[in-house]
Image 1 (cartoon, one colour):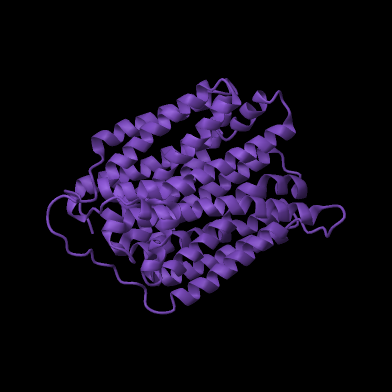
Image 2 (image 1 turned 60 degrees about the vertical axis):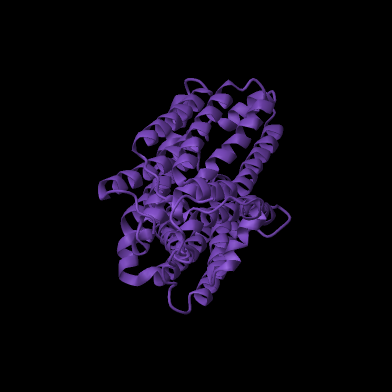
Length: 422
């Protein structure tokens, strides 16, 4: 494991990565309430066209993450984590300025492409955590990263809706300021986590999306864990895909009801990821924590689908939130399968799989929802949640098989000659 100098600096670095994740998600969140309206303004208020364009924007964003996550991960294995994180933050700030000034739908589209590229640096943040955290504490640190997403998810849309009421482009300026301040802050407090003698030469063979996935086959158990993680990511795409439509259709919720419920989900996720992951992992170990999280996830999704009213829907909230412990546990298990010189590539491969899940999930769940509320078909509005529950159950089966033996021991980095990498 790579060590950065001094316990105090290590804590400061982890704090920065946490703040980076919060601000990144916050910056993405503040534009959620206004981006669809901005798109609609460019197409003369045509809602149908706006929906189609917005869908293309989401697909392109996920595609950019699929392509560039392994590239940035491999670059961080070659040049270190610090420059990749900082350059991405500065690039994200510039991108939000571009979108704030965008004079046409074409320029806004370019902005979404750049957003997908710069947001791909989150994999590098995960590699940084693996570098500076002992293997037995990685699940906790990855859990804190998940808590950061929860905080950003709570505050971002609320802030965006508030300042978007003043000017629909104001949230983009706010996002740019947050990203820029984050980058400046990191310039002064973020030390490098990957020593030069642990770095590996950059290779397009490893950095392209398909090539990066070969790493998952190169280490025992890693492909199975990645496959299970992929299924988890697909299942969780049900939330952004159909939640708003489902809540309005089945429960008659308005924007206020949806906003409050999303805030409740964010708070619950923050509590679980930030406060419960480490105690549970300490008590049960990563394997049992993973399996418990998957069981809770499957129960939670099934409960959402069965709930006849809004009050019953929230019965599934504790189960759905506890599913978050599975994500932290699998990240910890996967990070133990590779050495420090491959952590960036591993996180890049994970982010690429996440991008694929984001390409598949939305269409899968919206299509399922449409079929099962069609006036000529069976009326089962909870069908997308049942499908998500089944996918998590399949992930449980994969996890049970892959982790049937002892948890993987931390992999020692291969011996290298001292001096900088070639």
